[in-house]
Image 1 (cartoon, one colour):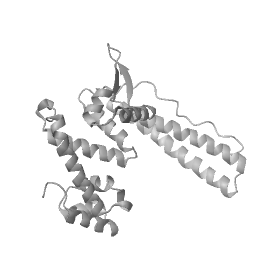
Image 2 (cartoon, rainbow, N blue to C red; image 1 turned 180 degrees about the vertical axis):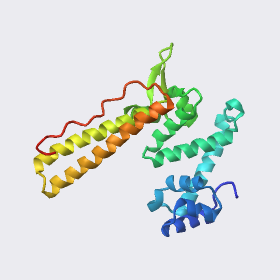
Image 3 (cartoon, rainbow, N blue to C red; image 1 turned 180 degrees about the horizontal axis):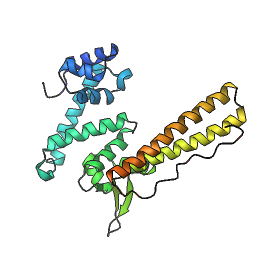
Image 4 (cartoon, helix red, strand yellow; image 1 turned 90 degrees about the vertical axis):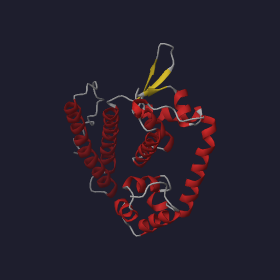
Length: 252
């Protein structure tokens, strides 16, 4: 299996495969590359609909140039604990970031969450994130504020009253329960809309479908999340109130 960076010809093959509607796995098989390589390449360069081989190749060349220029400033890669390969760690962090972006997180938020998740301590100060990611303090500040709102990280203070941003073991539980709560609120609003527009009308029936679908999915999500917490034995505290508002009897 070939290693190293993608060539311009390989990127053109990726573009052709996307145009033909091929899955990432099939494109990767034809290139004799890991599927993750193709996934990362497409996700970071406009997605399936926006991928352009020439533009992606020029972007990759500029990225390599910036990294080479950054080496004298950083002087050397930070020493890795547990005897880890620094380059392998960097590559994995990049892959993990790409997957988080594919799940819907904006790029900087995905980079910060990946950095925190992969830190052995599970926490960093803003200054540590700035140094690790080589970005501005303002970028980190905006990213951590967003991640806190999404219940993906929390903020602690040490004995010197410095803020530390923390990824808990139950981060995905907290995030999923927050998502379930938002979905439950949508169900309640949709049912109110049914009362306003009336069943049997196009808008009323559409809102009723939204309420029924989200109510069903939310119920499954809540039960699955609780079962997973029990299965993995994590004490994650009391979940948010995710029960949807009782529907208006007149609307069902």
